[in-house]
Length: 369
Image 1 (tube, rainbow, N blue to C red):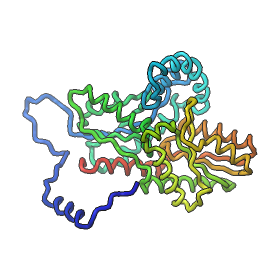
Image 2: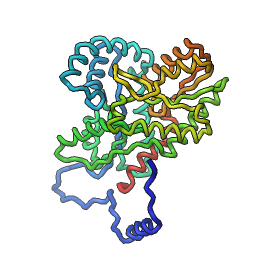
Image 3: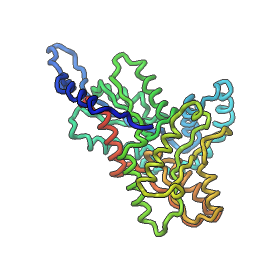
Image 4: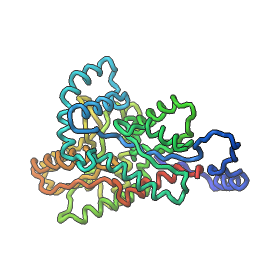
């Protein structure tokens, strides 16, 4: 998708109007009467929302997390009468144990939590410091779409702290109904029950933002420079979605393709050096292709000896990047003749990663501060 071009006259018109239009100062409030009850307001909340993580690796915490996640009709849109028995009688009987063992391998034992929660908390903490120059009326918080802390709880906390304006940042560079849209669903569900709703902005995706592309390139270059070998092929692996979702109009595949194309150009790679694939398939339905694991297998069998995988669709490392890419796909590669394999870490709370999040937050705060 290209950017909308405006004529010079159109831009001059906008500038001329800005000279005469009144400026609204959000921090200015008229004094209250002496007998007015105490009410906190006038602040702006910035809420980072990531996917979620179980509260523990044993059966019941894993089951609760998977049940909430796989019950979301944005994620699985199979008719409920058909999906309910499959989910509750089959999947939730066996999958919690398997995924619990996978989470055990990546669990942050010091904090007793999944790494996605650790990184998202740190991202929010660092964003607070980066927005200090905007004043004390900016409050930064974080939530998980599935699990805890919940979106509803953190919106309540932000309102209690005086936030009557809210910027929600779904932590997904590429838009998909199963990720970005379901965050919006949960936010709107909460607002529908509120007597005093905050004004709301939901950040759009940033799949083609130059700061994001530059951060990915810098992070990947720094990682590759530390290796004692050079990758023959680099895969940009994104989380997959069913092919049917794309056919129904989801722009996710196009966003992933544009990110890959821009990153390839930024790195100066030919098409066959940096390739796009999709991971984390679920169920028997056809998903968008090419599949990461099948591509890794085929390339190893074709004689590729050195491979790197970057996961640009994840803003923080999690089960899908650490275990699925760094362990499972590494094993597939080496089992089929490959020799050297590396998974490039996500941007996480690195300086480059925080540059991206700060840029998105400041963009969405424009006009409010």
